[in-house]
Image 1 (cartoon, rainbow, N blue to C red):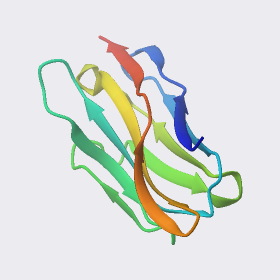
Image 2 (cartoon, one colour):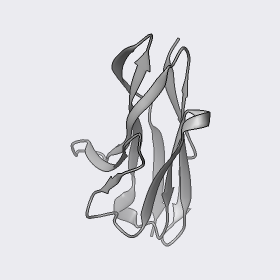
Image 3 (cartoon, rainbow, N blue to C red):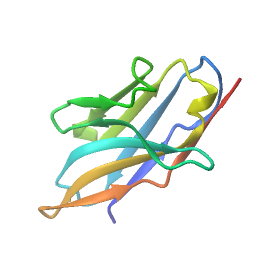
Amino acid sequence: QVQLVESGGGLVQAGGSLRLSCAASGSINSINAMGWYRQAPGKQRELVATITSGGSTNYADSVKGRFTISRDNAENTGYLQMNNLKPEDTAVYYCNADLVVYGLAYDYWGQGTQVTVSS
């Protein structure tokens, strides 16, 4: 069964850091783009950062200079390093990836991991 599993969320004080991981498992040929999204209570899901298979990155203005997206293609894993966290970063963070399975590309989402930043 192909799936994305996130880990690394938790409770942290403002100014602290967390590192989220997103591991893809199953019969995967390769991974195209990967991304992180977040959804705060009462708000729509929003893009946080994306990374292409070649390593090109894109960030939401609100996280530029604080968050870093990366990936390990050999391990089929993506990461989101979050530094200088702010209370407004509190949300459920979701991993998204375009996975190639038996030669066809499919869009997958992880189950989400809670990040809570206290002031």
